[in-house]
Length: 241
Image 1 (cartoon, rainbow, N blue to C red):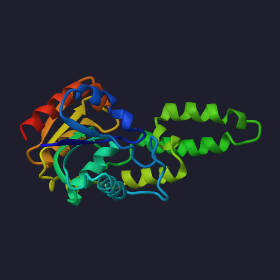
Image 2 (image 1 turned 180 degrees about the vertical axis):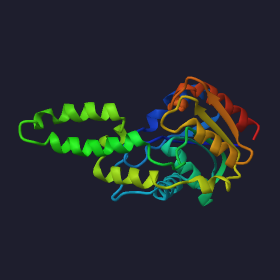
Image 3 (image 1 turned 30 degrees about the vertical axis):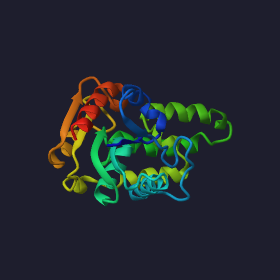
Image 4 (image 1 turned 135 degrees about the horizontal axis):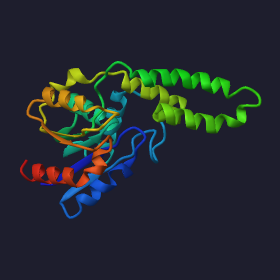
């Protein structure tokens, strides 16, 4: 049977985010699909601010245009891509036979105080740096400011994608998790500061029958840092599916 693996990258990533996984899966019979999501890589931004459902619908259309809509597929998704994978599983329009969630986003929590203060301070700082005589410092000042406050994703995005980021982060996907009956493996770095390890346990507990794989010393890039270990799990599960 044909084995198809769809890879969904995170916010700010691209299909290149799965380079290490591709290398780790070389020699297997798995067909790997790695689209750039709208607004990232070579894919243009959408024509309006999107929601998670918009991204899920785009993936369904992307697969249909390539005659994969009716194929049995497995999905590996990192961070923002995890949101989309959870939505795709809930929508039920694809024949998904396995989910591999890597540091998946989707658990909404109160805004991190540092990030909230940072975004406010960034706006004030942007105004100050626009004062005549200081405007020449603006590019350097913004770079230093955002580095200190760690709000790179928001700062680097266009206004349209900033609104899209607000849309997707404002939706809590927790209520959808208990409805997932697809076999699921969850991979997480124990030192992840973007999607904390607590989220991994929330997803593991909510998704019945899921398997949790955690890695000490690994941060948010678990899909890259542990690509070989993830590939071993994928090959084992698909060969015994």
